[in-house]
Image (tube, rainbow, N blue to C red):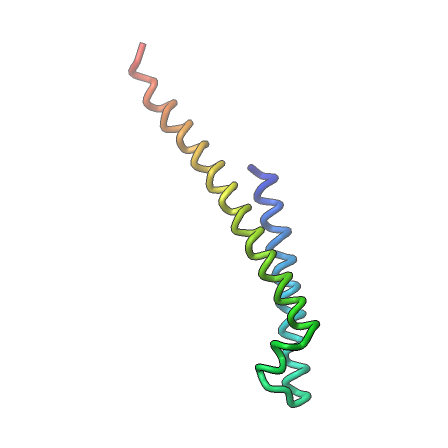
Length: 87
């Protein structure tokens, strides 16, 4: 489970880095006088947006794996506590 948590932290870090790069490009393009529509059509901005969306999906999948693992651990703990009275 610790490996899943580490993978999640790494992917979240990558997502934050991409987000910052995307915001930097947006700020630069706004300073150049482009409107939001033109910014969205910018190739570098679109590429970062696409990669960020992909990472968002990957993060959601990792979170599902982590939640499944946590549920199995909790289920195992609940089963163990129920077995004390049965001999």
